[in-house]
Length: 397
Ligand SMILES: *Cc1c(COP(=O)(O)O)cnc(C)c1O
Image (cartoon, rainbow, N blue to C red; front, side, top):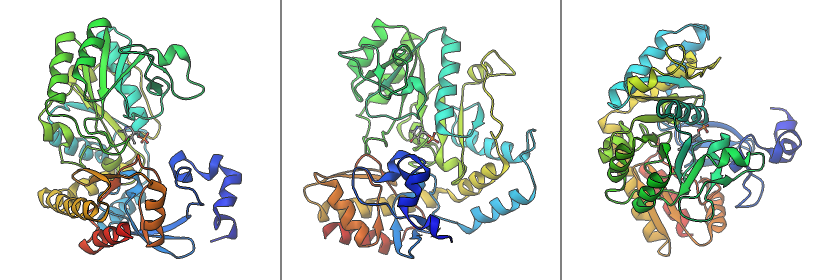
Protein backbone atom coordinates (compact mmCIF):
# COMPACT_ATOMS: atom_id res chain seq x y z
CA UNK A 1 0.00 0.00 0.00
CA UNK A 2 1.39 3.41 -0.94
CA UNK A 3 1.89 6.24 1.55
CA UNK A 4 -0.66 8.33 -0.28
CA UNK A 5 -3.59 6.19 0.90
CA UNK A 6 -2.34 5.89 4.49
CA UNK A 7 -3.81 9.09 5.79
CA UNK A 8 -7.27 10.54 5.81
CA UNK A 9 -5.69 13.97 5.28
CA UNK A 10 -4.51 12.91 1.82
CA UNK A 11 -8.05 11.79 0.99
CA UNK A 12 -9.31 15.28 1.84
CA UNK A 13 -7.28 16.66 -1.07
CA UNK A 14 -9.03 14.28 -3.46
CA UNK A 15 -12.62 14.07 -2.24
CA UNK A 16 -14.96 16.66 -0.66
CA UNK A 17 -14.43 16.09 3.07
CA UNK A 18 -12.17 13.15 2.23
CA UNK A 19 -15.12 10.89 1.52
CA UNK A 20 -17.40 9.58 -1.19
CA UNK A 21 -20.49 9.67 1.07
CA UNK A 22 -20.85 12.33 3.79
CA UNK A 23 -21.39 10.24 6.96
CA UNK A 24 -17.93 8.68 6.51
CA UNK A 25 -16.28 12.00 7.41
CA UNK A 26 -17.04 11.60 11.17
CA UNK A 27 -18.32 15.20 11.24
CA UNK A 28 -20.53 14.70 14.30
CA UNK A 29 -18.14 12.59 16.38
CA UNK A 30 -14.94 14.47 15.51
CA UNK A 31 -11.44 13.19 14.87
CA UNK A 32 -10.09 11.66 11.70
CA UNK A 33 -11.81 8.47 10.56
CA UNK A 34 -9.56 5.43 10.14
CA UNK A 35 -8.84 4.36 6.57
CA UNK A 36 -10.03 0.82 6.13
CA UNK A 37 -7.93 -1.90 4.56
CA UNK A 38 -9.67 -5.22 5.02
CA UNK A 39 -12.62 -7.06 6.53
CA UNK A 40 -13.38 -10.69 7.44
CA UNK A 41 -16.52 -11.88 9.19
CA UNK A 42 -17.39 -9.45 11.99
CA UNK A 43 -13.95 -7.78 11.95
CA UNK A 44 -12.35 -4.95 10.00
CA UNK A 45 -8.75 -3.74 10.02
CA UNK A 46 -7.59 -0.21 9.29
CA UNK A 47 -4.47 0.65 7.29
CA UNK A 48 -2.48 0.82 10.56
CA UNK A 49 -3.45 -2.77 11.31
CA UNK A 50 -5.86 -1.93 14.17
CA UNK A 51 -8.69 -4.46 14.47
CA UNK A 52 -12.32 -3.54 15.19
CA UNK A 53 -15.57 -5.43 15.72
CA UNK A 54 -17.69 -3.87 12.98
CA UNK A 55 -21.29 -2.80 13.61
CA UNK A 56 -21.48 -0.67 10.45
CA UNK A 57 -21.71 -3.58 8.04
CA UNK A 58 -21.27 -1.31 5.04
CA UNK A 59 -24.43 0.54 6.26
CA UNK A 60 -26.65 -2.44 5.66
CA UNK A 61 -25.57 -4.76 2.86
CA UNK A 62 -23.26 -7.08 4.80
CA UNK A 63 -25.82 -9.22 6.61
CA UNK A 64 -23.47 -12.23 6.22
CA UNK A 65 -20.42 -10.28 7.40
CA UNK A 66 -17.32 -9.32 5.45
CA UNK A 67 -15.94 -11.63 2.75
CA UNK A 68 -18.25 -14.56 3.47
CA UNK A 69 -16.61 -17.48 1.60
CA UNK A 70 -19.77 -18.33 -0.35
CA UNK A 71 -20.27 -14.72 -1.41
CA UNK A 72 -16.61 -14.35 -2.41
CA UNK A 73 -16.80 -17.54 -4.43
CA UNK A 74 -19.97 -16.38 -6.21
CA UNK A 75 -18.28 -13.07 -7.05
CA UNK A 76 -15.15 -14.84 -8.38
CA UNK A 77 -17.24 -17.15 -10.52
CA UNK A 78 -19.37 -14.36 -11.97
CA UNK A 79 -16.32 -12.20 -12.70
CA UNK A 80 -14.68 -15.04 -14.61
CA UNK A 81 -17.77 -15.40 -16.81
CA UNK A 82 -17.29 -11.91 -18.23
CA UNK A 83 -19.93 -9.27 -18.68
CA UNK A 84 -21.85 -7.11 -18.30
CA UNK A 85 -23.30 -8.30 -21.59
CA UNK A 86 -25.94 -5.72 -22.46
CA UNK A 87 -28.36 -8.64 -22.48
CA UNK A 88 -30.47 -10.33 -19.83
CA UNK A 89 -28.65 -13.17 -18.06
CA UNK A 90 -29.61 -16.07 -15.77
CA UNK A 91 -27.82 -14.19 -12.95
CA UNK A 92 -30.69 -11.68 -13.08
CA UNK A 93 -33.52 -14.17 -13.29
CA UNK A 94 -32.04 -16.21 -10.40
CA UNK A 95 -31.98 -13.24 -8.04
CA UNK A 96 -35.28 -11.94 -9.43
CA UNK A 97 -37.11 -15.16 -8.59
CA UNK A 98 -35.65 -15.23 -5.08
CA UNK A 99 -37.04 -11.73 -4.48
CA UNK A 100 -40.45 -12.46 -5.97
CA UNK A 101 -40.77 -15.59 -3.83
CA UNK A 102 -39.93 -13.70 -0.64
CA UNK A 103 -42.16 -10.68 -1.45
CA UNK A 104 -45.66 -11.71 -2.63
CA UNK A 105 -46.47 -8.03 -3.37
CA UNK A 106 -43.73 -7.99 -6.04
CA UNK A 107 -45.09 -9.53 -9.23
CA UNK A 108 -42.54 -7.88 -11.50
CA UNK A 109 -39.42 -5.90 -10.76
CA UNK A 110 -36.52 -4.06 -12.28
CA UNK A 111 -32.91 -3.97 -11.08
CA UNK A 112 -31.06 -0.66 -10.90
CA UNK A 113 -27.69 0.21 -9.37
CA UNK A 114 -28.67 2.06 -6.17
CA UNK A 115 -31.49 2.64 -3.76
CA UNK A 116 -31.61 6.26 -4.89
CA UNK A 117 -32.43 5.16 -8.42
CA UNK A 118 -35.02 2.67 -7.18
CA UNK A 119 -36.90 5.39 -5.26
CA UNK A 120 -36.72 7.91 -8.08
CA UNK A 121 -37.90 5.38 -10.68
CA UNK A 122 -40.75 3.95 -8.60
CA UNK A 123 -42.15 7.44 -8.02
CA UNK A 124 -42.00 8.10 -11.76
CA UNK A 125 -44.14 4.98 -12.24
CA UNK A 126 -46.55 6.12 -9.52
CA UNK A 127 -46.97 9.52 -11.17
CA UNK A 128 -47.54 7.94 -14.57
CA UNK A 129 -50.07 5.48 -13.15
CA UNK A 130 -52.11 8.08 -11.26
CA UNK A 131 -51.67 11.16 -13.45
CA UNK A 132 -50.84 13.06 -10.23
CA UNK A 133 -47.60 14.86 -9.34
CA UNK A 134 -47.47 15.10 -5.55
CA UNK A 135 -45.59 12.64 -3.35
CA UNK A 136 -46.07 12.33 0.40
CA UNK A 137 -43.16 11.32 2.60
CA UNK A 138 -42.43 11.31 6.32
CA UNK A 139 -40.06 13.32 8.49
CA UNK A 140 -36.99 11.34 9.47
CA UNK A 141 -37.09 8.98 6.52
CA UNK A 142 -34.45 8.77 3.80
CA UNK A 143 -35.14 7.62 0.26
CA UNK A 144 -31.87 8.47 -1.47
CA UNK A 145 -30.69 11.82 -2.76
CA UNK A 146 -32.86 12.54 -5.80
CA UNK A 147 -34.04 16.17 -5.93
CA UNK A 148 -37.70 15.67 -5.08
CA UNK A 149 -36.93 13.46 -2.08
CA UNK A 150 -34.55 16.01 -0.56
CA UNK A 151 -37.46 18.05 0.71
CA UNK A 152 -38.25 19.00 4.30
CA UNK A 153 -41.50 19.98 5.94
CA UNK A 154 -43.01 23.30 4.97
CA UNK A 155 -44.54 25.64 7.54
CA UNK A 156 -47.62 23.81 8.68
CA UNK A 157 -49.62 20.65 8.28
CA UNK A 158 -49.80 19.28 4.77
CA UNK A 159 -47.94 22.17 3.19
CA UNK A 160 -45.65 21.61 0.24
CA UNK A 161 -42.03 20.74 0.89
CA UNK A 162 -39.03 23.10 0.95
CA UNK A 163 -35.59 22.20 -0.42
CA UNK A 164 -33.48 20.28 2.10
CA UNK A 165 -30.28 20.68 0.12
CA UNK A 166 -28.78 23.53 -1.82
CA UNK A 167 -29.27 22.98 -5.53
CA UNK A 168 -32.74 21.48 -5.24
CA UNK A 169 -35.20 23.60 -7.23
CA UNK A 170 -37.98 24.97 -5.02
CA UNK A 171 -40.49 23.85 -7.63
CA UNK A 172 -39.25 20.27 -7.38
CA UNK A 173 -39.24 20.23 -3.56
CA UNK A 174 -42.81 21.57 -3.70
CA UNK A 175 -43.92 18.34 -5.38
CA UNK A 176 -43.25 16.58 -2.05
CA UNK A 177 -45.43 16.86 1.07
CA UNK A 178 -43.55 16.07 4.28
CA UNK A 179 -45.47 15.12 7.41
CA UNK A 180 -44.70 13.52 10.81
CA UNK A 181 -44.19 9.75 11.02
CA UNK A 182 -46.82 7.73 12.91
CA UNK A 183 -49.44 10.47 12.47
CA UNK A 184 -52.39 8.97 10.58
CA UNK A 185 -54.50 12.11 11.06
CA UNK A 186 -51.87 14.14 9.23
CA UNK A 187 -51.91 11.60 6.40
CA UNK A 188 -55.70 11.80 6.18
CA UNK A 189 -55.62 15.62 6.05
CA UNK A 190 -52.89 15.66 3.40
CA UNK A 191 -54.62 13.09 1.19
CA UNK A 192 -57.92 14.97 1.49
CA UNK A 193 -56.43 18.35 0.60
CA UNK A 194 -54.12 17.25 -2.18
CA UNK A 195 -54.15 14.80 -5.08
CA UNK A 196 -51.21 12.58 -4.08
CA UNK A 197 -49.67 10.07 -6.49
CA UNK A 198 -47.85 8.04 -3.84
CA UNK A 199 -47.06 7.80 -0.17
CA UNK A 200 -43.47 6.64 0.25
CA UNK A 201 -42.37 5.30 3.62
CA UNK A 202 -39.62 3.43 5.42
CA UNK A 203 -41.99 1.06 7.23
CA UNK A 204 -39.42 0.84 10.02
CA UNK A 205 -37.36 4.03 9.93
CA UNK A 206 -33.67 3.22 10.02
CA UNK A 207 -32.25 6.57 8.90
CA UNK A 208 -33.05 8.68 11.99
CA UNK A 209 -31.90 5.95 14.25
CA UNK A 210 -34.40 3.11 14.43
CA UNK A 211 -38.03 4.25 14.83
CA UNK A 212 -40.81 1.65 14.91
CA UNK A 213 -44.23 2.19 13.34
CA UNK A 214 -47.03 2.66 15.87
CA UNK A 215 -49.50 -0.21 16.13
CA UNK A 216 -51.92 0.03 13.23
CA UNK A 217 -50.08 2.87 11.49
CA UNK A 218 -49.01 0.89 8.41
CA UNK A 219 -52.41 -0.80 8.07
CA UNK A 220 -54.11 2.59 8.45
CA UNK A 221 -51.88 3.99 5.75
CA UNK A 222 -52.89 1.14 3.48
CA UNK A 223 -56.59 1.92 4.03
CA UNK A 224 -56.24 5.68 3.54
CA UNK A 225 -54.17 5.37 0.37
CA UNK A 226 -56.57 2.84 -1.11
CA UNK A 227 -59.55 5.12 -0.40
CA UNK A 228 -57.84 8.05 -2.12
CA UNK A 229 -56.46 6.25 -5.18
CA UNK A 230 -52.93 6.94 -3.91
CA UNK A 231 -50.23 4.30 -4.34
CA UNK A 232 -48.36 3.01 -1.30
CA UNK A 233 -44.59 2.61 -1.77
CA UNK A 234 -42.58 0.76 0.89
CA UNK A 235 -38.92 1.71 0.91
CA UNK A 236 -37.41 -1.56 2.14
CA UNK A 237 -33.89 -0.75 0.97
CA UNK A 238 -32.69 -1.41 4.54
CA UNK A 239 -35.48 -3.58 5.94
CA UNK A 240 -35.85 -5.97 2.98
CA UNK A 241 -34.30 -9.37 3.78
CA UNK A 242 -32.94 -7.69 6.98
CA UNK A 243 -35.72 -7.59 9.59
CA UNK A 244 -37.41 -10.62 7.98
CA UNK A 245 -36.86 -12.41 4.68
CA UNK A 246 -40.03 -10.79 3.34
CA UNK A 247 -39.17 -7.43 4.90
CA UNK A 248 -41.41 -5.19 7.00
CA UNK A 249 -44.39 -5.97 4.80
CA UNK A 250 -44.31 -9.63 5.85
CA UNK A 251 -43.70 -8.75 9.50
CA UNK A 252 -46.54 -6.22 9.73
CA UNK A 253 -48.86 -7.89 7.19
CA UNK A 254 -49.36 -4.86 4.95
CA UNK A 255 -49.14 -5.13 1.17
CA UNK A 256 -47.78 -2.08 -0.66
CA UNK A 257 -48.30 -1.37 -4.36
CA UNK A 258 -44.58 -0.86 -5.00
CA UNK A 259 -41.48 -1.85 -3.02
CA UNK A 260 -37.90 -0.58 -3.11
CA UNK A 261 -35.01 -2.87 -2.32
CA UNK A 262 -31.23 -2.46 -2.19
CA UNK A 263 -28.36 -3.09 0.23
CA UNK A 264 -28.75 -6.78 1.34
CA UNK A 265 -29.97 -7.94 -2.10
CA UNK A 266 -26.59 -6.99 -3.59
CA UNK A 267 -24.46 -8.76 -0.97
CA UNK A 268 -22.19 -5.70 -0.71
CA UNK A 269 -22.13 -4.70 -4.39
CA UNK A 270 -23.94 -1.71 -5.93
CA UNK A 271 -27.61 -2.53 -6.40
CA UNK A 272 -31.20 -1.39 -6.12
CA UNK A 273 -34.53 -2.77 -7.28
CA UNK A 274 -38.11 -1.58 -7.55
CA UNK A 275 -41.10 -3.77 -8.15
CA UNK A 276 -44.70 -4.48 -7.34
CA UNK A 277 -48.01 -4.92 -9.11
CA UNK A 278 -47.53 -6.20 -12.66
CA UNK A 279 -49.93 -3.61 -14.12
CA UNK A 280 -47.79 -0.84 -12.60
CA UNK A 281 -44.44 -2.33 -13.61
CA UNK A 282 -45.70 -2.84 -17.16
CA UNK A 283 -45.77 0.95 -17.46
CA UNK A 284 -41.95 0.82 -17.56
CA UNK A 285 -40.11 0.95 -20.91
CA UNK A 286 -40.09 -0.94 -23.21
CA UNK A 287 -43.53 -2.25 -22.14
CA UNK A 288 -44.91 1.19 -21.35
CA UNK A 289 -44.33 4.95 -21.48
CA UNK A 290 -42.17 5.39 -18.32
CA UNK A 291 -38.53 5.65 -19.35
CA UNK A 292 -35.89 4.14 -17.09
CA UNK A 293 -32.60 2.44 -18.03
CA UNK A 294 -29.15 1.54 -16.67
CA UNK A 295 -25.86 0.48 -18.30
CA UNK A 296 -24.80 -1.50 -15.23
CA UNK A 297 -28.30 -2.50 -14.06
CA UNK A 298 -28.51 -6.22 -13.30
CA UNK A 299 -24.72 -6.51 -13.30
CA UNK A 300 -23.83 -10.23 -13.09
CA UNK A 301 -21.35 -9.78 -10.22
CA UNK A 302 -23.87 -7.88 -8.09
CA UNK A 303 -26.59 -10.41 -8.93
CA UNK A 304 -24.31 -13.31 -7.95
CA UNK A 305 -23.22 -11.69 -4.68
CA UNK A 306 -26.85 -10.93 -3.82
CA UNK A 307 -28.09 -14.43 -4.61
CA UNK A 308 -25.28 -16.03 -2.59
CA UNK A 309 -26.19 -13.79 0.35
CA UNK A 310 -29.92 -14.51 0.11
CA UNK A 311 -29.20 -18.26 0.01
CA UNK A 312 -27.65 -17.91 3.49
CA UNK A 313 -30.76 -16.23 4.88
CA UNK A 314 -32.92 -19.14 6.01
CA UNK A 315 -35.14 -19.35 9.07
CA UNK A 316 -32.22 -20.28 11.30
CA UNK A 317 -30.31 -17.19 10.11
CA UNK A 318 -33.13 -14.86 11.19
CA UNK A 319 -33.46 -16.67 14.53
CA UNK A 320 -29.73 -16.18 15.05
CA UNK A 321 -29.91 -12.45 14.19
CA UNK A 322 -32.85 -12.01 16.56
CA UNK A 323 -30.97 -13.69 19.39
CA UNK A 324 -27.84 -11.58 18.85
CA UNK A 325 -29.99 -8.46 18.57
CA UNK A 326 -31.80 -9.27 21.78
CA UNK A 327 -28.48 -9.83 23.61
CA UNK A 328 -27.12 -6.48 22.40
CA UNK A 329 -30.35 -4.63 23.23
CA UNK A 330 -30.54 -5.99 26.78
CA UNK A 331 -26.82 -5.53 27.38
CA UNK A 332 -26.86 -1.92 26.22
CA UNK A 333 -29.88 -1.16 28.42
CA UNK A 334 -27.86 -2.37 31.41
CA UNK A 335 -24.64 -0.66 30.30
CA UNK A 336 -26.31 2.66 29.43
CA UNK A 337 -29.22 3.06 31.84
CA UNK A 338 -29.87 6.65 30.67
CA UNK A 339 -30.19 5.61 27.03
CA UNK A 340 -33.22 4.61 24.98
CA UNK A 341 -32.47 1.47 22.98
CA UNK A 342 -34.72 0.76 19.98
CA UNK A 343 -34.35 -2.44 17.97
CA UNK A 344 -36.01 -4.41 15.20
CA UNK A 345 -34.17 -7.68 14.52
CA UNK A 346 -30.56 -6.89 13.61
CA UNK A 347 -31.14 -3.10 13.39
CA UNK A 348 -30.51 -1.17 16.59
CA UNK A 349 -30.07 2.35 17.91
CA UNK A 350 -28.95 3.41 21.38
CA UNK A 351 -30.18 7.00 21.71
CA UNK A 352 -27.86 8.75 24.18
CA UNK A 353 -27.32 12.37 25.22
CA UNK A 354 -23.63 12.40 24.39
CA UNK A 355 -23.17 10.32 21.28
CA UNK A 356 -19.61 11.46 20.41
CA UNK A 357 -18.36 10.19 23.80
CA UNK A 358 -20.03 6.81 23.31
CA UNK A 359 -18.57 6.52 19.82
CA UNK A 360 -15.06 7.42 21.03
CA UNK A 361 -15.24 5.01 23.97
CA UNK A 362 -16.26 2.14 21.70
CA UNK A 363 -13.70 3.02 19.05
CA UNK A 364 -10.84 3.04 21.55
CA UNK A 365 -12.00 -0.40 22.77
CA UNK A 366 -11.90 -1.73 19.18
CA UNK A 367 -15.63 -1.57 18.48
CA UNK A 368 -16.80 0.40 15.48
CA UNK A 369 -20.35 1.80 15.37
CA UNK A 370 -21.69 4.31 12.83
CA UNK A 371 -20.26 7.79 13.50
CA UNK A 372 -23.76 9.26 13.80
CA UNK A 373 -26.56 8.93 16.31
CA UNK A 374 -28.93 8.69 13.36
CA UNK A 375 -27.46 5.64 11.61
CA UNK A 376 -28.48 2.21 12.86
CA UNK A 377 -26.04 -0.37 14.18
CA UNK A 378 -26.05 -3.43 11.93
CA UNK A 379 -25.61 -6.95 13.31
CA UNK A 380 -24.52 -9.73 10.94
CA UNK A 381 -24.50 -13.51 10.96
CA UNK A 382 -20.75 -13.29 11.45
CA UNK A 383 -21.04 -11.67 14.90
CA UNK A 384 -20.42 -13.94 17.88
CA UNK A 385 -21.81 -13.62 21.39
CA UNK A 386 -18.31 -12.49 22.39
CA UNK A 387 -18.45 -9.67 19.83
CA UNK A 388 -21.76 -8.53 21.27
CA UNK A 389 -20.48 -8.71 24.84
CA UNK A 390 -17.39 -6.76 23.89
CA UNK A 391 -19.56 -3.93 22.58
CA UNK A 392 -21.66 -3.98 25.76
CA UNK A 393 -18.59 -3.87 28.01
CA UNK A 394 -17.06 -1.08 25.96
CA UNK A 395 -20.29 0.92 26.15
CA UNK A 396 -20.34 0.59 29.94
CA UNK A 397 -16.84 2.15 29.96
C1 LIG B 1 -29.62 3.53 1.74
C2 LIG B 1 -31.02 3.87 1.52
C3 LIG B 1 -31.48 4.41 0.30
C4 LIG B 1 -30.53 4.82 -0.80
O1 LIG B 1 -29.79 3.75 -1.30
P1 LIG B 1 -28.39 4.08 -2.05
O2 LIG B 1 -28.00 2.72 -2.59
O3 LIG B 1 -27.48 4.60 -0.99
O4 LIG B 1 -28.69 5.06 -3.11
C5 LIG B 1 -32.82 4.58 0.11
N1 LIG B 1 -33.70 4.27 1.08
C6 LIG B 1 -33.31 3.77 2.27
C7 LIG B 1 -34.34 3.42 3.29
C8 LIG B 1 -31.96 3.59 2.52
O5 LIG B 1 -31.58 3.16 3.73
